[in-house]
Image (cartoon, rainbow, N blue to C red):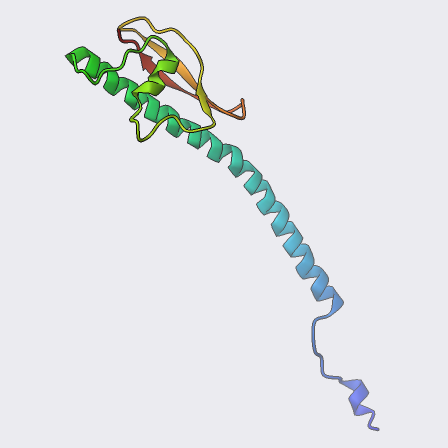
Length: 131
């Protein structure tokens, strides 16, 4: 046997130090991404509630103008929950959302609140009363 084989062996694979460094970097990256992901869930939920509130705001406004011009398409709105009836039949209030009750006088505007089923996330929209 030659002693040269033991002096300079061919290296194959990774050393324990290299593997430890890579695993540490993956752990650091995973913890960073987990924190970012946790922050995205409430943000996405808030954006969804904002979208529902925006749709209710537009629907209430269109309904009010139907009322003002005497259109048969106008829906009677006495409270904020009635505004859900102004949405198109093909796009009702999505499941998991509710509207807080608040009276609206005819020709008046109030700030209404739409709530997500989690009980925490909410958004506001303008309700317009009709008779």
